[in-house]
Amino acid sequence: MSSPETDPDATLAFARHDHAHCACDTLARAEAEAARRGARLTPVRKRTLEILLEAHRAMGAYEVLDRLAADGFGNQPPVAYRALEFLVENGLAHRVRRLNAFAACMHPGEDHAPVFLICRVCDAVAEAPGAAVRAALDQAAADLGFAVERANIEALGLCPACAGGADDATV
Amino acid sequence: MSSPETDPDATLAFARHDHAHCACDTLARAEAEAARRGARLTPVRKRTLEILLEAHRAMGAYEVLDRLAADGFGNQPPVAYRALEFLVENGLAHRVRRLNAFAACMHPGEDHAPVFLICRVCDAVAEAPGAAVRAALDQAAADLGFAVERANIEALGLCPACAGGADDATV
DNA sequence: CTAGACATGTTACTCTATCACATTTCTCTT
DNA sequence: AAGAGAAATGTGATAGAGTAACATGTCTAG
Image (cartoon, rainbow over all chains, first blue to last red; front, side, top):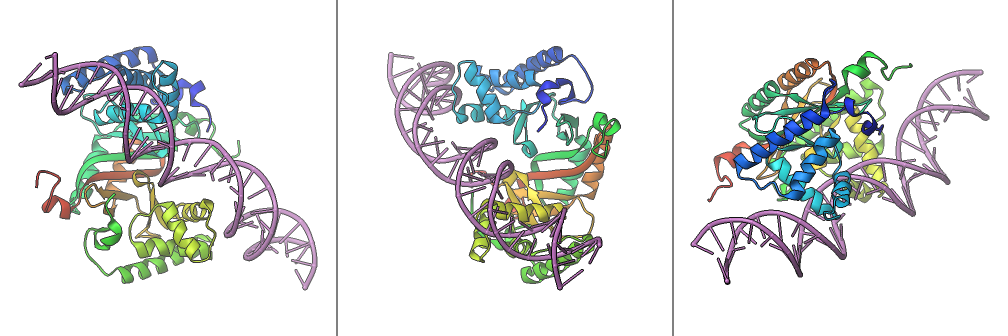
């Protein structure tokens, strides 16, 4: 893997923006959403969400665990997995299966069907609005009598930056 | 997990049909497709595809490996992973990330965007036609300047049988 | 203030996947 | 047909991801 950690602007959204602001804002909305659902956003869980928001990219469970441990929480896998599972169950984070990773939800509360766009060159991950995709999926499933409850829609390809400038061709 | 192995009719397609025939037919089409692409469908690879077709369901890499080993091939993980990767790369099989599993492609050669429908009750997996879903995905990605190359579209929910008869409610 | 539910911490382990290297087989060119 | 290079396979070792089970602690409702 390359190191998206050193290039935060290329993660989770392809456009540049104020991370500190959007993270703080999203955290506030996430807390409101948790309260609305009656879900208990305990210290570990809140810190886990903060970690995802601060990193502003998809993170592996063990990477999250390292940071939790550094903050004085447990240092065993279940600590991270339980917190992450809680966040996903409550719509505050998403799981990106292609990357075996997790990312904070950028639109907590707004009933949405996230679509993840993963750049194969720079590893950036963007959460795109996927209402139309989800609708098409529901329809395709309904045609077979299948009722969709949860969906993972993930695409691998080229982000604007990597498609425009340097491709993987002979550069 | 429940045991889809004991209930083959509930796998990969929700409708009952002649497995032996569809497996044999699909294998023939897969071989033609491999030849067309100039891909070498070696013994291990062919046997791997046969195993997936015979099982007619999503299988874990290690489960495939066990059968390969029983057939006299190597018994180390890379043996299965390499063969499976080859099949996926050449459109002869698909990877179902949600299940950490692989399934034979039911429509080799026909350029298609598979959508996987996974029943959370009986674990059946169906490969549904997803051209419309893929089109919506491409559009959503294009709106952000992202070019989709490969996509994983997987849905968890209830298959017709499980939705109709016994739900997970208090039965 | 006590019982039950919920949450956390920890140990241990299983399952999934890849790296690295030796060996063989195939294919293309001459 | 011979030989070089590429592709494929086998094997050992190991990294990475995820879960089971149980003990302990904490919150909350009656």
